[in-house]
View 1: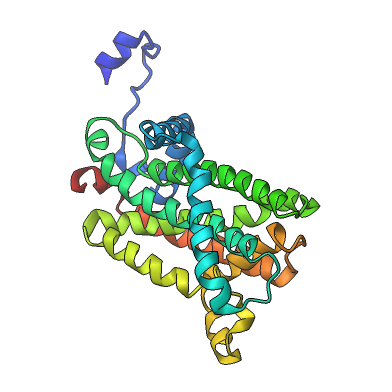
View 2: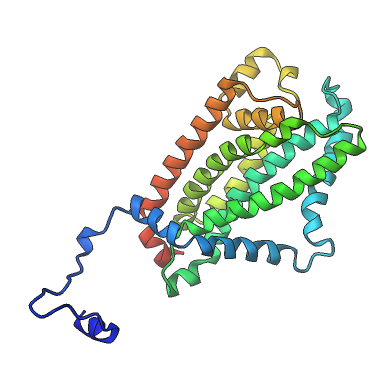
Length: 287
């Protein structure tokens, strides 16, 4: 400590006591991780930029693939299910796409958080950085992809003769709610993936089942009433309904839906942050 002070030219005045580092005075991991994340916020921006550039570097369509991908999925689902469901929803293609863009944001953010944390194992072993930076960067990358997908939605709506709606200005509200939930899920899943290698492939399989249990490609009112009541326990149903009401229906979500979505988002973020930070100091040695 004395050598460091001499080199830095910040020796205390004669008679003053030297500062003593006490590891016991460190804040808890729950608080320390948040403080470090604020200091390393510029790193989050760099990681988001790296992820976007790396993903589309060798792609023929480049960033445009983010818009083409949901469009192709929407086309397939519309051709397959529009006659099967006999959906009363107007502009069924837009109905599907409005749910898909939100679902893809959630799915891509949570899966990328796990893979990015595994990728950052070598980096964490060499330099200090908050481990939660990878989950937040994955969420940021998902937001970039969501924005591009919304551009595709706007183009398709114009092609189908549906003009832009004033409610689109309110999209940050449902996006913020599902973003909180996705970040909490990403943190919890990343913490589990550090200790159990099977978490990532298992989660990808469960995501497929979760998609079909969420009214993304079918209207909820086509199902029997008892099934609808059971599906109300699916948290993603609330996020899809909130997002779709703004983007597709052109209206503000009702107070109950907003309260449920933000309540779920904040609760999941608190739980995920607690799970993640409990062992965050060990991740560099286990990844």
